[in-house]
Image (cartoon, rainbow, N blue to C red; front, side, top):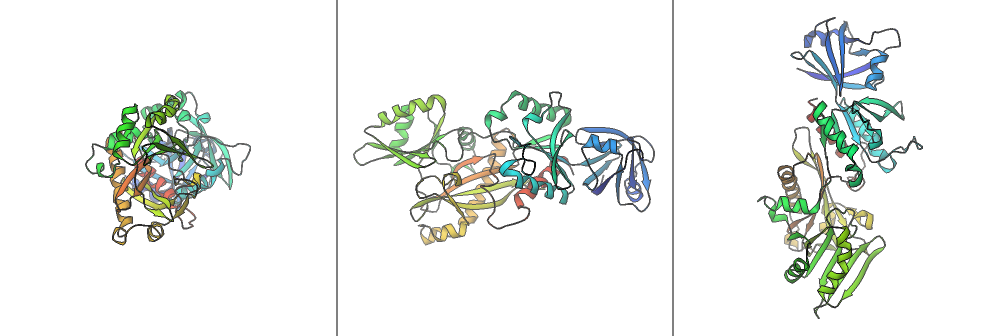
Length: 456
């Protein structure tokens, strides 16, 4: 078995039969492909009986227009090829499908809104590596799960076409409600069972699920602040007696929404600070029981994780945390793509960019911080090691397939690293490395990992 990149040529109608492909004779000899005998061509879920005609001094592959339509392909595409003699199968690919939440057919120049640039980068990164990428939404999923309607990039334009089921699906749905639709769950189950497709980042993570799973891992437990699912007043009372500050976080929240910081005052009353879009709202309660009573309405619709408050490093009085983007690479190993510091906005106690936070390098943030000089050494290395150990812990203890994770970390004033949360759908805007690159390393790694999964 060997593999390389071939350029696809689509022949005009009538010049070739659908069941025939033409391949450079050097490849035919090298791979010992039987000539003018039936073999199978595979592209994603497509299986097409074909015969191969060798062409002297030709460095590509020619197919009929009918076969190109079945594949959703066009001339000039570079695809990797693997011939498996024991199966008499010529595999082309990989075909990568990106499952996204929505599209904008009425805006053909920017059909995916804010992530259109990311999608364009994926097209370029795929062609660099001899892969083909398409984009589809839950509305494009067919009931029979034999094919999908998908967006492809052709001759500088975005257009829709019918595609086989991809070898690899990267689930980039941004809504739990959408992800849990019966049609989406049926699709993910069927493509894995019927076509042996791989799906990565196949589900959202829940804060309670993550902390409960990781607390039994000796390598990771040291990074975990004390944390529980808030079920009763006693849990709140116990945590507030142990820690001067605690945080309540929606177990399924994101972007800093709905976070409450609770602190005790000297007279034994309590303050709750609520994170809102416009800043922080502060409320005073004469007792903890009164505070808990104010939360009971929210707890009927949201589950809350209660977490030990940390004395975070600060920059000019504003708390700083860190986002590590950790991705599987071509060798199926977790690797650090980027780590950036996020400093909270002046009116906020959370650092999310959606709440006015700002990005900087780890080095800049540490240099300007209130960390003691002896705590500033090797901060990046400690964040890197923590991120990799946490990603490996997620892999080991949570039964789902992940290829990239956004891991939010904190460093307290003594220099100790803590886990804040793990995000299985890291925003491509939030994680953008600070230097400008045409194709971001994070995008290249998506393709590299897809190639690993598909054997290309």
